[in-house]
Image 1 (cartoon, rainbow, N blue to C red):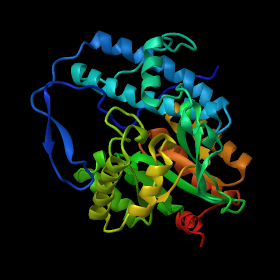
Image 2 (cartoon, helix red, strand yellow; image 1 turned 45 degrees about the vertical axis):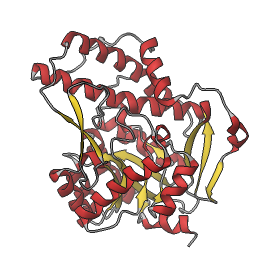
Image 3 (tube, one colour; image 1 turned 60 degrees about the vertical axis):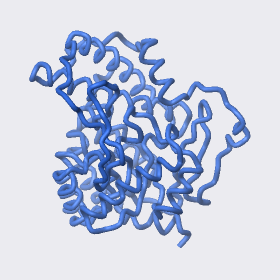
Length: 373
């Protein structure tokens, strides 16, 4: 069995405390209510945190393997990929708490996971609560064939538990054409990824989180925009503070959140955001249609998911990615600019694409396809 490590993505607040209170702030890219610590957080139980880490890591291994084994856009892939992304964020949150208490980075000892193919009832219950993939189909069961958003471009399919999932098509791309996208930044690696893509003549899309648009984040996305890339809307907290997808919010609240993120992008880059990607690919057709009409954002899914959140090995990621591209022959590629292995693999990938007859095309091709131009 191949050895797998997991790199951790954006922080998501997964707990509530009486030490938190709401302040009304209206900063670009931030929602109206921001949770601000009033006092120093209580010391955490490191033993319990490490036990939780092992338990979640074990489940993440299971869903990572399942995502790799499943056909992309199949119900099995959608469920495993969403679970894996969520658990990866949970692990980072726990690792940050451990570092706060011990002052050291936490690494899981070899062979110290809960056990092979083990998903505890506790973790499974949490996942079901967040995504409800195991829910019972309701009145929309007849819509399981999908809700068309734009012919030949994308639609919403109702998958396991009646969860609405954005299915992207890439028929507007010719064989050998690729669009590169990066999620969940900006972070410390964003500028390096941006520069590597610019050097290779590979205009990309960076889907950013409003929660990361502090002063350093704004500087990073300005650099990406100056490098010729598109800076686009992903969410504020990767959907909700608790890591749930946008289906946990009303359409009005979703619009409010995304309007703030779009404003933050415009303030930092001087350019209007043109694209939106829902976290996990989960979004209701009502919300997506409102986003495209009210915010004038082109929806973007993906047709090649590198699953870069699931491995620390850049060589493995690179080989997996080029294999997927060879198999499909073209596509919209999903990566994350927050992972060291993704930074390394992406820099190699663009050189491989150029050497093997592929072309990284402008993201504007998606806007034209969505508008039917």
